[in-house]
Amino acid sequence: MNVHFSSKTDEWMTPRGLFLSLNKEFKLERDVCATMENTQLPRFWHKSNDGLKQNWKGLRCWMNPPYGGHTGKWIKKAYEESCKGNTVVCLIVS
Image 1 (cartoon, rainbow, N blue to C red):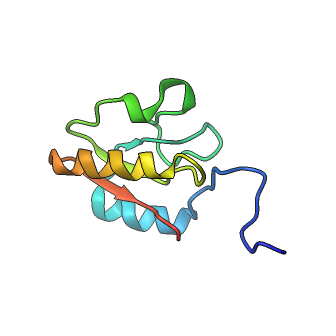
Image 2 (cartoon, helix red, strand yellow; image 1 turned 30 degrees about the vertical axis):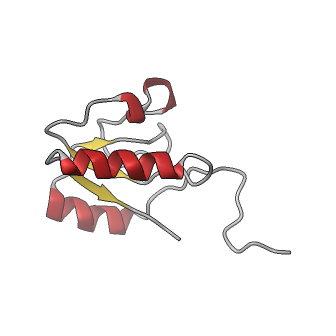
């Protein structure tokens, strides 16, 4: 069976035009789950400093989560942080 969006990685880079449009509206400050190769912002958290364990307080956050076994944890964290008044803009593909 062929899978349309098959990949060797669960980390997908956000299309630059889409990100720029969202960034213009929300003035994003921190990419909460990125790699050096796919980050859209100068300030970001990656696997070794784990954005799930960080305090997002007062930040306007961008989140394009890794798609795989941990996606639900990222969605939960984004929801919890938004309930605290933080801005969290997410790219979710189903």
